[in-house]
Image 1 (cartoon, helix red, strand yellow):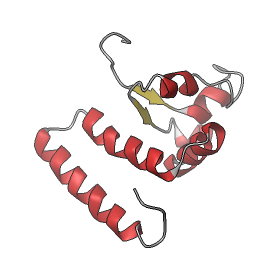
Image 2 (cartoon, helix red, strand yellow):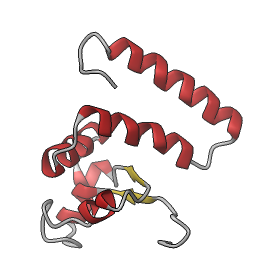
Image 3 (cartoon, helix red, strand yellow):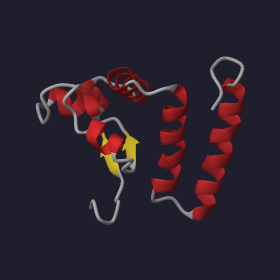
Image 4 (tube, helix red, strand yellow):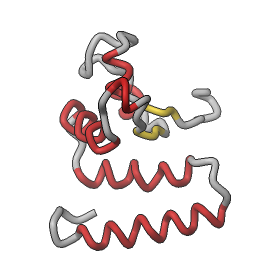
Length: 110
């Protein structure tokens, strides 16, 4: 996995609530982020863990001091890491950038 740089799905709330890590601060996200390892922020069983994708990004940002540009770049990369066809990825990229351009008036530069 590490050698091939296979992207990791990070479900931080699930990992903490299920006890696979002791807390947000001790989550392995920090090591992989520092190593610039490819990751995708995800949710895991939202009914059980009661966490939206927005909440997962907020937890990651607050815990590991990520800025808006970091979060946007992680979101962009998640499209590339998906199993979608090239055509679907192209549509997703276009939609992402359209939505992002609508946010530019309300947030910092990306």
